[in-house]
Picture 1 (cartoon, rainbow, N blue to C red):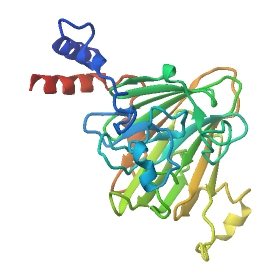
Picture 2 (cartoon, rainbow, N blue to C red):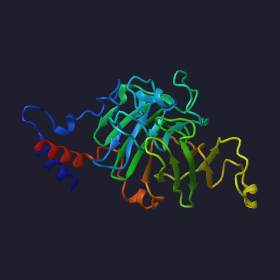
Picture 3 (cartoon, one colour):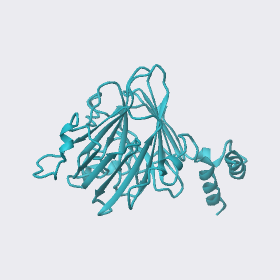
Picture 4 (tube, rainbow, N blue to C red):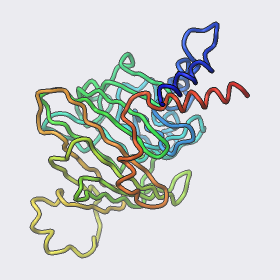
Length: 322
């Protein structure tokens, strides 16, 4: 059925004087440099998820204007892939729930300096490795030795990471980062690892959209073999009552849940080592009102690839006919 829809949309939208289809002619990279304020990542027509790379979120407020959409074509590194973005808005906010794959035994929890390779979890990349179509984005992360692929449906973003053989596979989830950031923008954040391996969390921010609460649920194609939660918040007089069982945990970083005002990051290991380059996938559902059901992120997400092509092709056709 999907192939028939794709064929019908292609025949309807094909321009007789131009090879290919209207869908193939769309270039999401347009506007990603200078002050265009567009992002190249994956989204569905009228979708709630805009899954796209962020090249630098370390700036503060007005110095971030060039990075209003998270991605700036001239930057040498990718910091990670977050799930919400504005395109061409002329202002900035969002950049929620940044994920970055890391390979090897060392797992940095800070993004590092873009001018100093290896100083954090960010990675250099080459534009020649980028592929961008409506609903699909891919890039090779040079320092991480990872091929990253992204796609999205209406409420779910799907990642596929192909790690180098023989290296441990990790994901860093940083709840601290935000676009058009400033100290105090994130009011609180939380993360929880559930018994079935689902990772859920929420955060509340005050930016262009004040008092905004967003929640997520993540599922993985391979079971987690380890995890660590880190809270870098300091000078907190009282953190609430701690149950006696917490003292029996192996480490304060290794608990099933963590709450903080602003400063949570997590590392999730999906593979110790492998001889093959088998990809690892994660699917993330989001909700603006409550914690998404863990089932959402398994039922609704498609595998990374140009899976949104039929839907995008139909949407483009409708606009052409107008």
